Length: 399
Image 1 (cartoon, rainbow, N blue to C red):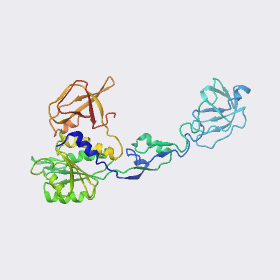
Image 2: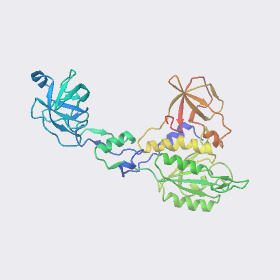
Image 3: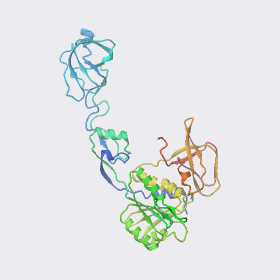
Image 4: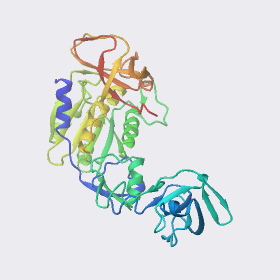
């Protein structure tokens, strides 16, 4: 049995590189960018009017006063026009190319019009209301660095440089496997000695948040059929996420089956609660990574966030989404285990305060639905009120 920190390090040491793939722009959100994005033109690509109004030559104000005769119209999305006479002005719309020979834009609200003549009524500055070519980005500059998650903001940048197809980090192919004779499908009415499957549905939903569409399977407590099916799945998938069958019971067949199938055990059992019987390993021939979680729902849920999600982040060149919060009340851990305690997060005077929630154990699915995540309490440790602790979120706190 190993310490939590050692277990996590060993898991992260097995991060993989599954290569790259190209996906349509509209399917790239939430993926990890696998190429540098270069500006294919200046930004903006021309001197752009930022207001609806008139475009003039600034020096004409000194020579002729504040009145100008309209000689044309510059509209967004049309080629550049010219201001041929400095005594004239052109009307110009927001987003249009500033006319050739014009150097200043005056918004309509600062003018008055009579017939074809505009009069400027406010003091102006040369060059005002113009967004100059390349003032944001020059052609050839790097706009986005590879390795970043693609959000809605990055989508806009990708679209602006014509990236209809985007190169992203390839995701692992994952299978979710539940085990046990006591489990029945969701739509079935369980007998008194049965329960409905929940872990496989939770894991599949969690993986969908990572843009991984997992296949699901169920293994009955039969050593030969377990061995046969796992051998098949290890030849097909990059990662197997299993729940149940790894404790010390007489029907916990997975550890022995892994050994028979040539899966190298990295560790089995961690000094933590919940989730102590967690088994982790790798098939040396197929390179399949095996996360075998305890069957209790909270244990599976917590271990997914403690181990698989950080492993996936490192695999995709990212960082685990862990940060520090403040304990609302003191907490004492009298055990030799690292505890992961469910908490609700409140913002108090700009601080993220963690309020611990009581649960009825590692089968408490209802309690699980109420937490925002888990705080790490070190072994044999008393933490005082307002102590800083590591927080592992299980939901988006900002929605």
